[in-house]
Length: 396
Ligand SMILES: [Zn+2]
Image (cartoon, rainbow, N blue to C red; front, side, top):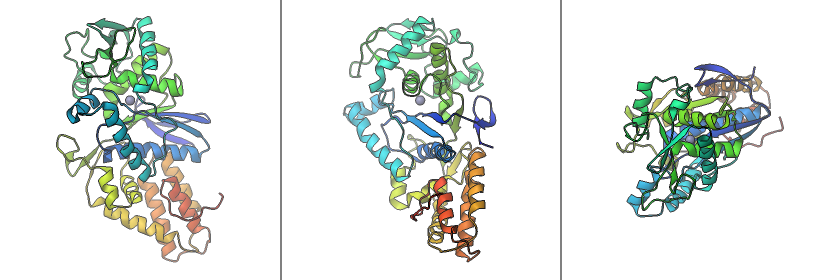
């Protein structure tokens, strides 16, 4: 039995059986504001999948892009009166510090949108050559009428797609579009926005083409695993898949994984409500390992509400783990390691994995058993979940 993961397209948990090298593309952030708990939950999910894949002997190449030019960073830079690249660099430093603190594995490659403009232009040129584009007033659109599979990733009907397009960065009311679901590939820049020369006129890329171009440039035309937060399913990933496959004629992603949203004490977390829980603030107050443990109480596909008191249970769990790791003996840890691996293979059942290491820690502390590998086994099992217990690990 290998890993089994839920695939958004097939709508069920299916075997995930990549080759020795696994290509993973996770949509990164637009660096214009601090990392919040929703970002942490998404990147933790991929981190756990990658750790287990490596445990199974795979080499994982995870690409996480930086959307350093799009419709949200430019207005923010304008508002702050600074260059958008300066804003991006500042926020990326903070983002990396948050990810490192949470012990999230670094990306194999982290391309920036501004560093990948040539790849975007060449992808749009392929789409143009294949007859999937049209141009109005200097803006080049993707013509969804030329792609019958449009909508197949999410399975949404046209009304649902139109609603989500309006809510999530699309512009279904743009009268220049032949179809409300058509989307921008290339557009003229405003006078104070960055602009690049292209065969479609001077301007800047649309949001979706950025990820397609960066993914293909770094990982090739077919990726093993692609995902992000589940608010990206439509329009972002649907559009990415459509334009990538329309350009290359190949399957873009073999498996799509999406992570639920995190709310805060009964309310949707949002910038406008001012109730974002920032990782930076949380980790100033608490051991980042407790933050990981706390998030792992929730299954990745299910959205959940964060309550501040949740961290207290995770702190107690972490204390037990750290304490147990100092003991000289305890129960045979092999069954715990097996349980953790089986739980991760079962569509990343983190709650079961977390409970398994907690149980072993409690038994060690209670004086059960006289196996001298108990503490190192516990550390190995916790390590599968990215929790370091500061003991020297024997070769396994
Ligand atoms: Zn993306």
